[in-house]
Length: 96
Image (cartoon, rainbow, N blue to C red; front, side, top):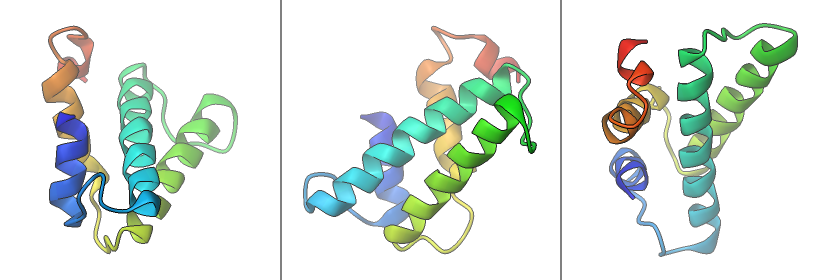
């Protein structure tokens, strides 16, 4: 829930209020978690392999952000919340 709360803060949308917005909020939360771990593993956006997957995930998270009305970069803010929440169990997140 802390990641979803961060998305709520960034978008002004409340989880549970509208089905379409809930889908986008969950997608952003899942994608930002995936991005955090991929980058921690040393993956950089590229045109092939794991880098291509990372690029697609980033773009999809940004698209869902647009659905929620976000016009400025926001993924880095949500990423910080992921690090705060999961950093104890996965200390490599804090090092990256």
